[in-house]
Length: 336
Image (cartoon, rainbow, N blue to C red):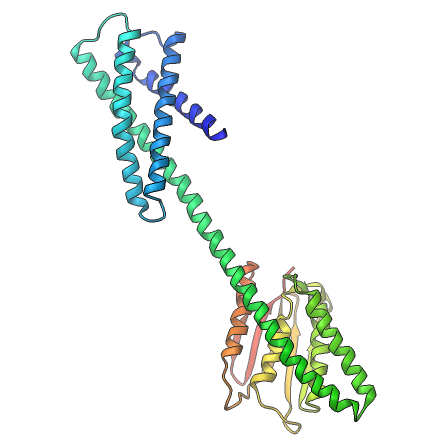
C-alpha cells in the first residue's frame, strides 16, 4: 500500500510539474480544477507504467548481473513507452481542454518540449531508481557477507572448542589417574580446577565478550592443569594493572595463545618455558620464548590466530598484532 501511495505522489507531482513547464505552449489557465485533475491522472499513469516496466526489468535483467546495462535498458524502455503514452495524453488534452486547435508549429513545439522534459524526468527517475537499488543491493551483499563470516566463525569456533575439550579432557583424566595414586590432595585440587575450566567454557559459549578478570581466572586455572602435567617445565608471569581488569576480551582469547605457546615450543624442567602476560589500559601482551619444535606443524596455530583476528574484525575492533624475534609476542586490544 505504501508503495502505491508513493507512486501516486511522485506521479501527480511530476504531472503538475510537466503542466507548469508547458504553460507557454498551451496558453490555458493553469489553475482550473479539470485541467489539474487531468495532469494529476496523466502523471500518475506515467509513474505507474514506469514502475511496471522497472519491476519487470528487475525480474529479467537484475542489477546484480549487469547494472550498467540494466540502467540503460530501463532508461531507454521507459523513455520509449512513456513518450508514446505522453504523446497520446497530450493529444487527448488538446482535444478536450483547449478551446482552439493548435497550429502545426505549436504542436511541434509542444511535443518537442514535452518530450525533452519527459526524457529528463525519466532520466532522473532511472538515476534515483538505480541509486536506491544499488544501495539496497550492495547493503544486502555486505550483510550477507557478514552473516556468512559470522557463520563460518561460529563453525570454526565450535570446532576449536570441540577439538580442545576431548583432547584436553583425555590428558586431564590421565593426570588425575596418576595423581590419585600419589597425592590425593593434589588430585582433588586438580579436579576442582578442571571443573572450573569446563564450567567457564560452558558459561561463555554464547558470549562474544567477557571481562579480562574473568578470562585471567580461567587462564590461571587452565595453566594450573598444565603445570600439574609438566611440573617445573612451565612458568606463568602476570603483570596486570588493576584498571584493565574490567576491560573486555573475546572468551578463550588469552587461553588460545597460552595453549599455542605450550603446544608449539619445546620445554623441559631444566629449560622451562616462560609465558608472560602483561597489559596497560588499552592492550594486553602475551609473550613466550621462541623455541619451535623441529617436527611441529603450525597449521593449527595459524588457524587459531586467524580465528582470533576474525573475531576482533566482527567486533569492529583493531586486530591482534603478532611480532616474532627471540620472543613471540601477540598484542590483543582490550575493549570497553
